[in-house]
Length: 315
Image (tube, rainbow, N blue to C red; front, side, top):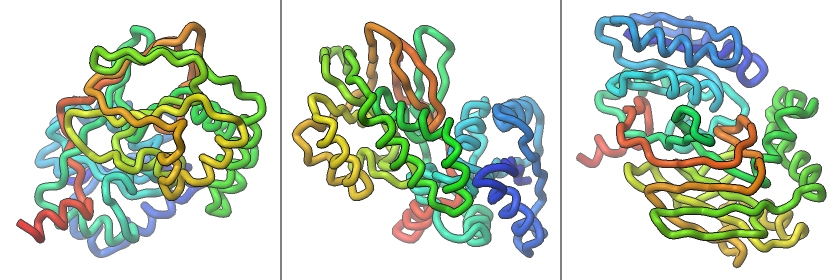
C-alpha cells in the first residue's frame, strides 16, 4: 500500500492539480493507495503521526505531494524510521527534490517510486532550540541574514504573485534588497565539536543536508547526503554591497570563493547569541537565542531517487 499526503494549496494549488492528474493515471490505478489532503499548517505532521501509530499492512511508502514545508512536517511526524518516504514536488521551492535526486514529471516520479526496491538512505538534521524538544530539519537551518530574508518573503504580498507566475525566486531577491540595508550583523558563539569561534560581525550561519535552499540556490555546494557530519557555512566581516554581489553567485555556488565565507564540518554545532536572532528551518522562520544541531543517526529510505537508480545500474 502507498499512502499519499497531499498539500492542496502548495504552489498555489499545484499540489492538488498534480494529485488529480496522477489519480487518473494507469500506474496509480494499478497500485493500492490511500490519500489524505492537508487542511491547515501542521496537519501533515498530525496525519503522519496517526499513520505511524496505526497498522497499515505492507505500507511501501508515504508519498508527499507538496512543497518543502509539507515534507518537513511529514518527516517530523514519522515515528517509525522503517517507513519509506518519497516526494513529488508540488511547491514553490522543492529543494528536497533537488537534494535527494528526485527529478522528472510527476508521472515519471511515481513510476520510479513504484519500481524502486531499495531507495536511498537520507539522514535528517536535528535541532534543539533553547532547550525545547528536538525536531528535524530536512533541507537546512540558518541563522541571521538568510533567515531575515525568508521571514520578509514569507510575510510579503508579492511572494504569492510570483509563485503563480512560477517566479518564486524573485520574491527572495526583492526580500534580500529590503533586508540588506536594515540588517545588523549578529554576535554569536559557535561550538563545533569542542572548538569555539566567537564572531562579532557575523552575517549568517547555515547548516545543510544537501547543497540546495531558497528554490535552487547552492548554499553549500559541497554538501552531500551523509550520516555523520554537518556542513556549516559562515559569512562574516562583509560589506553590505559585497553581500549583494555574493548572493548573485549563490545559484552557481561560486560565493564560497569569497574570503568572508568559511566552511566547516562538525558532528555537533551549538550556536549561542547575546540576544534573540532570527532563524529559518526549511524556509519557516522564528527567533531564538541558542540552538544545538546534530545529525539524526537513523536514516529514512527515500524512494524514487535517481541516485538509487544509478546505484542499481552500477551494482
